[in-house]
Amino acid sequence: MSLARYALVVASILVASLTILGLALRGRLEGPAQGAVLFGAALAAVNTLSAHALLCWSRGRPLRSFMIAVLGGMAGRMVVVLGFLMIAMMAWGLPTLPLIASLMGYFAVFQALEFASLRGAQASAVEAQ
Image (tube, rainbow, N blue to C red; front, side):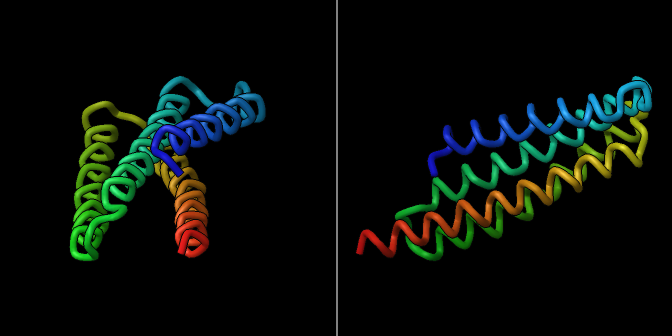
């Protein structure tokens, strides 16, 4: 799946789920908690788009390049996500529970999407041979 198509799928998931979540929790979340949920969702989206961009870059390259991109990218993304979490909680004062719940929930959804995308890419590569 191309990066543009993947980004469209991620954006669609975000818009649909945040709309449903917003309707379901109407009046139950205050401003800072709403901001925390949105920030967690956005951070998870940027994380998965970064992972997919590295995957797209590594296609057709030697295994060594693939492993460096995937493993190095994973370590780098973990540091960046942790840094933004610390900033969000300590400097911006976003509530911890909604922020972490949103980040982890969307991370799980996007992880499943990444696995499905990888499985589809592997199937296409096998069929092409």
